[in-house]
Length: 276
View 1 (cartoon, one colour):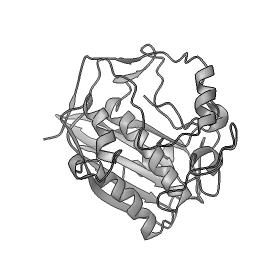
View 2 (spheres, helix red, strand yellow):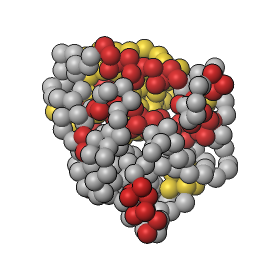
View 3 (tube, one colour):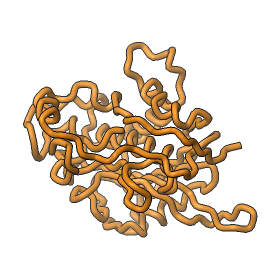
């Protein structure tokens, strides 16, 4: 049975090797010149994800079947056998860095919910995201809200490309309300690919090195995979805001794919975000 597990060790930086296979050399040189002033990643005694957890996908807006397959395959590959990978790095090999802090966690693809009628409109607030996330299972699950390229979301492209958090669910455990973890990721293809689909699109700011070829030929959705990868790692290790995060209690820094124009101190403007 799935549960939430607490650990008392320090979480090292998780490098998203899967996503940053060939970071531009100009970006690397700039990063070396900037001193990283980010606070250390500390454990704050809260629960982590553990046991068998389903990753439910809530598709909001219109996605092609091929686009849904890309993200579904990514989620499935998190639990694949690393020994079957033809050449490193693979998704499952990268996820082992998270497994070191959540060794009993097993993620698997769960339910998929489609809302192609834009039932909440095409301009969503954070409250709408929680409402959408509530449509998935609320026990032993992480609900992932994926918004299509024609949907505007509060803060999207301006300060974030995706986010993770938790909300009070309708399911009660031992007569008490419980919380469930959720993630939101937007498709930036038509709104801000230079901010949220880097390195598969020319960055809006920073070194203008050639972008990498999107592995599936879909800049927007391949960018979503990068964002989802980091947010899943953040959710596994800090599902309820009291697990692993940077800074002191009450002043947390969580993983969030930042737009290049709003990167924190210690990162270049073309950085894809804080990689632990």
